Image 1 (tube, one colour):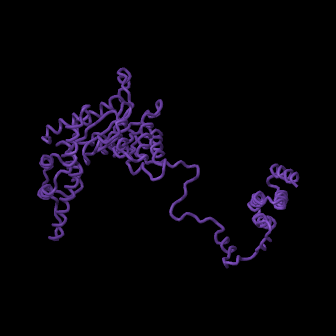
Image 2 (cartoon, rainbow, N blue to C red; image 1 turned 180 degrees about the horizontal axis):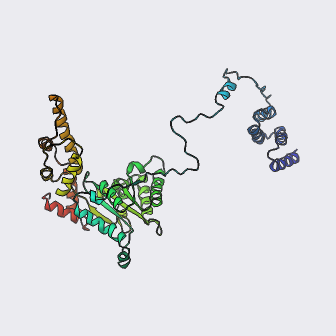
Image 3 (spheres, rainbow, N blue to C red; image 1 turned 45 degrees about the vertical axis):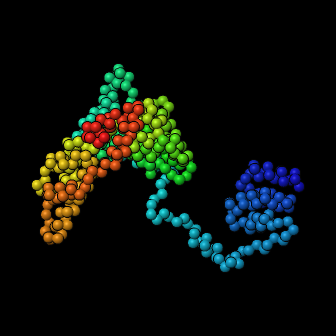
Length: 402
């Protein structure tokens, strides 16, 4: 019997589609008490011929414990009363997707959305010092290849922008992409971190792969203090692994990051892992402060442009809002519009937004940067041994915030 089974097995391996031969082997295996092996062959026959009564009988015999009589083969509806035949007919064809078309199997859907930048630094009002720093770090070396070669100026590394929230760090990054005529790819912590082990690291890898495939590209890492938190202060292995993956991608062997300009933004640079700020990584720092007077005037004009206004003195508003961020000014415009709207509802006669509405809103809203400067002052005064925050310290002294 053993020799016969061995011969039949070799024959089946040579002719796997010979169903009668496979059934004969399955019967020999059942008779020899090797039911588990017989099940595999019976299942293979049923996969090709679902209506094979002989294969179903062999399957039942193979699954019957030794010493027990096999249960009678049922050809009708099971004893439960469920009509399997009807169910198979109802589900005989696949259900088409109702809400979205399935992507072709060979399509490559990008993991992150890359967009074209439609603004340039000319759209950023004021902020002369910020523009000069961006020009030195990115624009001048890129546009003057001969000088870059002469001075051996590398384009590797990235720029870390820091400052209080609402000062326009994302807007500046987008404007730089437009200035470079590059694609723009922005991500934050919600785009990276996932609950499953290894998923966050894979997201970082896919992020940089997308940026490289879209070069020239400005890759903007928002809230980098959350993405690249100091590993010494983190109790989570997931955070440490993400920082390690970021370091690996920023270093990248050879010229893999050629044409990828990495910008990062944070409100708390003192919480960023020091390894991310070493040479070749985010090795340049740019302090972005509340907008100067020219920038505030431009911001006022932008947010009032499409509103019904009359008798508004933008230059006076810019003077009155020293220390306010762009987000603060946008909120002031919303509040003034609300005042005019409610007045129009009460009087039954629509009216324009005037200077009085804007100054009334201004009296009720203080600058939002106060808490940030409180934290920044402590760092600048007591944790500035390497001079990283000298520029911030000078600003605090000039504006009497110490």
